[in-house]
Length: 251
Ligand code: BTN
Image 1 (cartoon, rainbow, N blue to C red):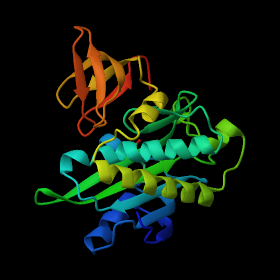
Image 2 (spheres, helix red, strand yellow; image 1 turned 180 degrees about the vertical axis):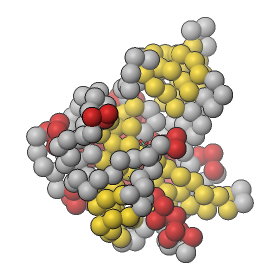
Image 3 (cartoon, rainbow, N blue to C red; image 1 turned 90 degrees about the horizontal axis):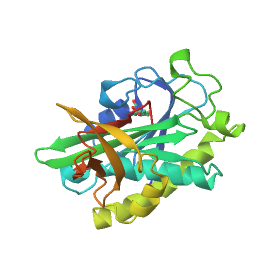
Image 4 (cartoon, rainbow, N blue to C red; image 1 turned 135 degrees about the vertical axis):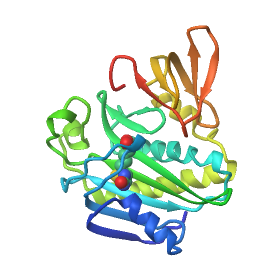
């Protein structure tokens, strides 16, 4: 993926929303928007993403992949994997992935990813891949304290966000190229599963119209989470519609 330049904002509603605005004006694949602060940061499942000007990364990338719409949710896993891989190279060895796309340190969320797909008829027009990383935050609001952490709190070091961001974009460009070539995740499946916090754990599968408990096994080459139900049946859970949570808490 060629980097088409990074657009920086001190304050914006949401970097994902800004990418949508730029995309509708014809911005090219690879456009990146970064903000110091978001006033309407978006999270998954219609939630908001707290985005104070507190030394964090709020970034979105515009992608125009030529893949079937059903395959686009895999990009979420590609980005999560890329960020986790970069954290490992920065010496943060204990990073784990909560399927499909949360990054976890010491049982707490350090990074969230929101990908949004826009269709042109039945084709993918563009995908917005947004990532929020708690980098240098030293304090969280009380309601997030037990659930969220930052790279600073885990390592005791202030991180250079510009370097981290560059590394993430470079690694993601390589992983993205593998994905568009193969149109599946076989190239990262094993490494992703090694970081998967859910592996072997009991999870609650949240489908749009029902929820059930099962044991998570790992992802398959399509990025679906294989779970084993109480009846011993193996099911593939699709990231586009479903998420999982731990039975006893966040992970
Ligand atoms: C989640 O719920 O875990 C996903 C959080 C995604 C947050 C990022 S911050 C940059 C980008 N812009 C947004 O409005 N959301 C994403």
